[in-house]
Length: 448
Image 1 (tube, helix red, strand yellow):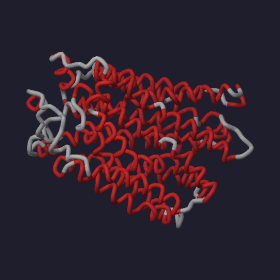
Image 2 (image 1 turned 90 degrees about the vertical axis):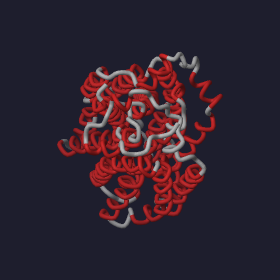
Image 3 (image 1 turned 30 degrees about the vertical axis):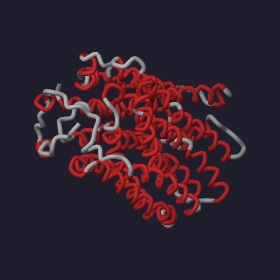
Image 4 (image 1 turned 135 degrees about the vertical axis):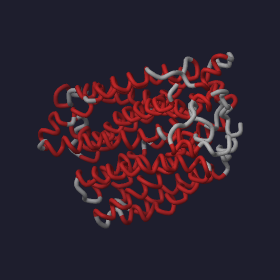
């Protein structure tokens, strides 16, 4: 199996899945609150719209159980093909959905159902994409490989926000609300076909194939996960909560916060988000590379500490001027959070053995995602009561980060202590062939 195609397959599908998922987040702030959840009070419309946004996050644990079961029973490849179809089909149908003015209450009802299907699909995609990369990684480069599918988040969001920005600039506001917003969702169909073709050309991961050949496939992965590795599941949930809340704010709710409470234009908010995500495209692989030298834990703790210290300054300075808003957005999202996120796939997956790795990794991560996905509801209520208070919003972020920081301090350095098995012949079959990966393979072998 050619390692470059494997990495491209893990990245391509991840990009498209996150493109679809974050399209909804952008449209929630810009379109859905008006077209699907009309109300005389704009705040109520936003609250209801973000409730459906959160529903997508709430559905992700269900997806992690369904697709985690499949990934640990029938294989990573087949499961990832299904998650793509689920996500792409839901997004395409959102682009065709009539509005509240056209079909009444059925419009928001169907929209919520499609959002739930998106969440279920994404609940299975993330863990599988990570394992597709890390279970094919040569010794000493797992951190770098594991960071590649993480690029799907910024690339998908950049593609999604760019598409909205481009269409918004080419249409009047009336045209944008009438039909322009639909085009990015409809374009999903083309992207999904491309990703399916790419993933169809790869083989099963060596780790799963070894489990299958040895007859070590468990009957019910979710039960085995909580029987033998429940502590690791709780670790993943706690490790993800702190940066997860801040991430949802910086990548989704910031569009509402910046336009409604800081007085910036929609285009300014979208541009700040796009630049931050473009920065992440550089930060993520660099920090994944570094994690193979100094460990995931060191980077994770360092990132959490910086986010904790900058929580209140972010909310103070973001409202001072457009330039400060851009600087703080890039620093918090594009650099610090990206450094944390670059390690998460590898860090979390190294806590689980191969026979339940898909399930354990996915369930822990997606339960945390379900919790933080309702952050926008809390923040809207906070903003109504206290305005854009740096102390209220910053204090909220610090509380979550403190929980994750404590757990991180008591988590093992998985670069040295890992549940990944060495697969005989993998290093030889996938010997690095470019200078970057060649240098990485000089690292000491990861011990079981």
